[in-house]
Image (cartoon, rainbow, N blue to C red; front, side):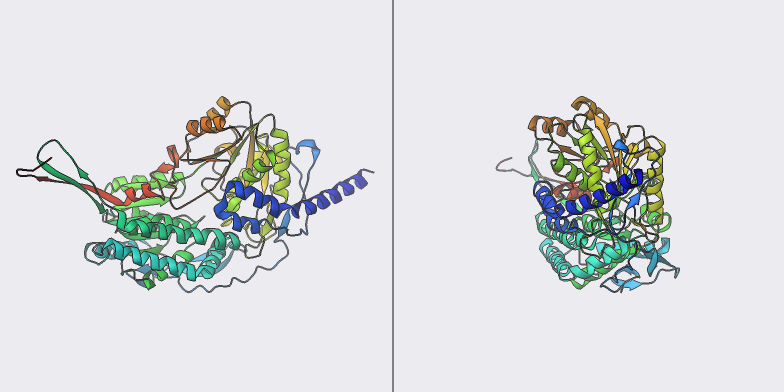
Length: 572
């Protein structure tokens, strides 16, 4: 009798999930119209239904509420051969002084396909000597080359031509990004590459609008300020959004007239090399943009310590950010901007439309395989709606479509590599061992590649590691709160301060939380809404300075005051 009831329940779960999937696309379209219109075309496709061929039975350390342990995921990975990417890898050398060259040591390292763990290509492994070569080329380009001596309008036209080439080659660029990173191709093609192009066009527009001020002072003097390029900018980008971070760093630096030495993440070197070749096709002079692939302790440390680098910009973990800051201080005290980690609260108030809140919270956490520095990784839900929210969040996670990121309709691809994959699984085990309730997921998918089930924990407490540490993976932690004062205190009780999300229908509640939360960005009834003009950066240990928008220009400019005496002025 128990076995019959079990089979009936299993069939019901499968039937209900299949029926729910048929409505997913429309629900997502409705949600995105409210939450994040700039990426709606991407995600409305990404959430398309894909039939499942497997079910998962979990044996939980602490059983899910209501005693249910049957979890069905829409997976498309376990028994399929990976799709052949529609792109060739043509650039694997270092880009120094406008030429692709081997590393001085002759060393290479493999860049891997996260779908399988297999080698895509061998890439030149830059070291300290290669950083020296790149910095020398950048210094010569800045001190002697045409780039800073061009009119700002001429610089803007080269950047605009580059954006046009990005648009022309967007299919190949998106395919490289997906192959090397594992993110869904639809996400890369329909959201990230358009944003890449938009950021370069935005800063191309700024290039001829950077100017100083004329300042009235006490006395017969003419005073003006000049906004000058800072010089050679060293930049280090992460692996989770390789090309977007490339744009956030390179575009404002070049618009201001600087030269650049860029170190890519060792996990994802391919797309930056490809697009930098296009930049030179657009007319960028040699030495203005140099790209070195390699590892942090060698190439990265050499760049941070280099005495001829005038400025550093880094995006990555908080721990590595501390090292970057230390190396900059110990060398020539170069200024540093940092965009670091986060543990962002997503607050669902008692007046929330729960269906919309569940969808938005799901997106806030699981987007990009959970590999977002600003992911809404602490989901605070008011106690009056907590149980309903948890049940619906679990159901939504069970419908998430995981599989080969080149396949149409896939929402979630593999994690970036084995190190990150194992780290996420350790945090999941920690959550179970610390007493949180595993509602769904918790395991790997398939036997190859780095796929992880979308995972949801309830009954999470503030002192658990899954509530404190940046997991950087598809793990949603749902916490309960009673009132605004409590949730403000708990949301701010973290070393991080990158972003926050608030879901409420009450403008007074929204205003209260907006001003009380210590975070660089607060999204109200939306999440991950990015625009080239919106500044992005953190409070506390989430970083220094801002990326994007007008504020970012300050990172790459020096302000010089010029004072000239006036003889017999007609007016002051």
